[in-house]
Image 1 (cartoon, one colour):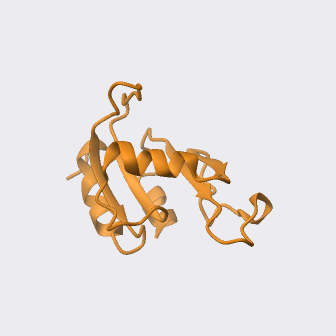
Image 2: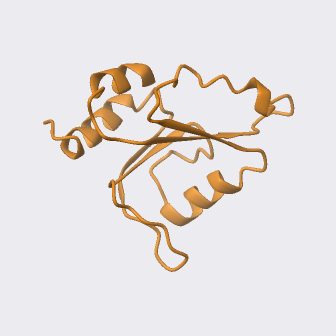
Length: 114
């Protein structure tokens, strides 16, 4: 599903940030294979202590059905994070696969498609 969306918007100027967290005791950085997200517009991060993921959920209050992993957030291209004010969300969902249609619909207007 992820690769489908990236292929569909292959000419779009976008950046995808993927944060991998240690969810299970056996999860390690060397096991992260990109999950098929091998597009040059994708940047991968390893967050062993789930610091980034926890901050995203706490500060942005996304609609991720209580998940603290396996979710997506959509922000404007010029979004900036500051201690005083987190950026506005254009969309969110979880799990990624279950809400892929919502991701596609939320991204379309930002990418010039309806």
